[in-house]
Image 1 (tube, rainbow, N blue to C red):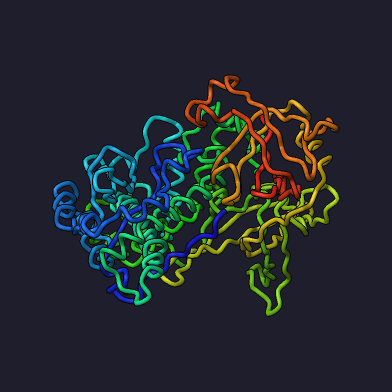
Image 2: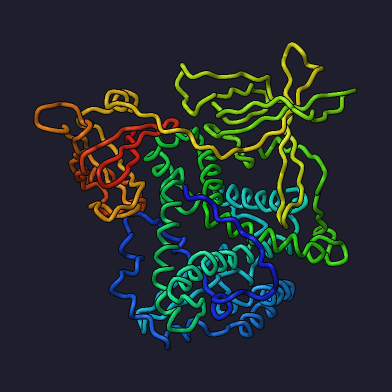
Length: 548
């Protein structure tokens, strides 16, 4: 997964050049599945010159007045939010706001006419209740429930209080969409504009040259993120049983039970919100809410008693029902700092006792914690066992205009129920190591033989590869060469024969030519990270996913 881009508020209200002359909104269409579609979205180098000064002037058109009037007619409170945003980030004035019956979205469009570039935010101003009360569809309910809990954690409020605060929720969601715009502006378009002009000034001609490259970089980085999701490339949590079953073995390798649909949907939603672009937009929105606390939380500005929420900074609270939100999942590397106790009150020593390792399974109330010294779930790996988890607490604190949630776990051994142990838990973001394996291990552990059906999911972009970024190829494994009956061998390619027509119940998850098979370049290394297996070839890296 791409390292998250941290959102940092600007030092002052004015943006530095070249940001001062343009704004943008760009993320691939979230309505469709992004797989095997690289060339459909990418702007090729031969089209760089098609953006002209005139078309960019259209792109730079200030739409603030028409946006404000539209929002004011629909929701005066959000009009105030929008107006404040434009004062703080005037670079976003060119983004067009559209009132649409949607669950909140934003798009970038490249018009065939004059190659114009457009950015739009779609928001349901006419029925904003959709952001507070989910549809009857269970998947929608789970997805919205998770989104609201995310907002609560990032703003320091309780879910029970925030879930009825209409002003806060709708403001956060609208700011999230504008956060995507600011992400593109700061992390893509600004970077390319700087490259284009050494004087760091922006003109329509400069922007015309920078836009296509910025758009391509944004698209490719987002695609890399989407291909790491539990259901790769699936941008929503509305996963059908067929799609879940199609990637069942991959889900198991991620510590997700494919037979528990709710578990799959929630993990998928969490993974999606943790992608670099989504987390940047969430942090942008949360920072706005925190900076405008009195506008959203104080009783004086709440039109009804149902919209009285408050932050809980510096206040410990139980979070047992939201453990999955904290990211303490199987395979995650954590650090545990032990608290001592005096008269029943926990305190930290000057040199506290610490534990660190990878979680063998996700944190659960009533279950023991098992830490692996190395990121290898092999039974022979050294491990440490801690007592059962009794309670989990969080302490929301404000740091650099963002909310940081400290996590404390209370452990109780059955033999000493009255002697609780307390640990501060921190995610270290340490990746499991690459463990070199041979062809025998991968074929044995994944139950692969000649004739087995597999997916090869591309993990690395290389211009020499015959497959494009984000492609998934699939088919039946053939012998690696004429003299062996093994399907996977070092210095031999993976050969897949077509299985077109064998899978008809997976909808638009894959393109029609998805299962046409194909050959990779020769394998130079086979390795495992946690429970997932990878092949490095001369031209790429592939994750190997067996069919069920």
